[in-house]
Length: 408
Image 1 (cartoon, helix red, strand yellow):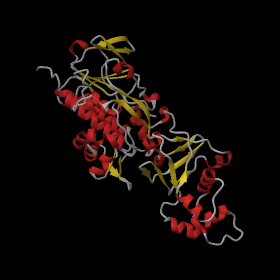
Image 2: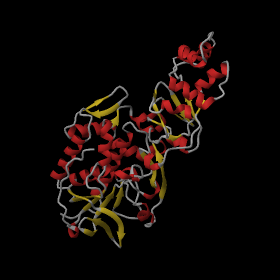
Image 3: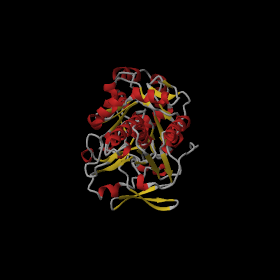
């Protein structure tokens, strides 16, 4: 991973500190951007040596900025949190994210599935342009500053130059959730906020694979992508691709079902979603002659070796006649639950919505706002995560800019 260049002085100007943002991910950078645009003097503190590390990691496979789709269906992707995020996404949603990228000199394009990417397909040019704009706006960036909670009324930091105490007039916390801790989202902040009487919903994996204890015959299929399938768990369904691995099942198709899987809903796989069950049964009834069952499935239904292996893995002994066709359409997948939180793409849980007001200010700590994955929301991959991080960061930054404004 190539880190974007970092800018900004590191000296301590705490006596005159106006606005502080803690966390250098997309939400924190956006909050700092909005505070500076409103004329606040902003310091952004980041624990890692560089900012935007998770953004850069996402950009390694093409930075999916947002999703081009109607507003109602876009908002529905946020599930139970849609009512709370609605106003924020209306103010800065999928259309505005595209305009924002273009304003940073990064043209975008929309793929066949509605996913929106920078034309460069990289995060680093966008991040460099964004940091240059922040530096021009006077944002002071301090890397290697790890927040350690409160010491009385001051925010305590460990820095390369020793402990520091800051007393900002207004503060935005954008410290991330609990997934990918090696990139900075380690949830170390949880006990500090809980100690201030702030309700924290326990973290859980989101956009995660599932653990599967495979039989030995599945090993040749590890790494195989499984396409042309449909998955269902509870009321959630998906037509995305999955990949078999030694540890279980990964891929966008399974990630979208994480909330239902986490809740213990049965997972089912349709190996032939484009064929009605009647058609599947009719094709299976064709004479097999001397063909093995596997060859019969391949010739009559076009099943790949990996799909046939999945059928044997989860439906042995295979039923005969129409029951086999029904099984191909509703194959139960035995699993051991989601992969661990540290492996998840994102996390559910965090600061409870009841702990913040409509401006994302903590009710227990006036002048302290929260943004990004610290908040208790989740969404599938495909641009929804980044859009909400940017949107909540903008919302918190705008409202923090108006709170306790220093007199000119």
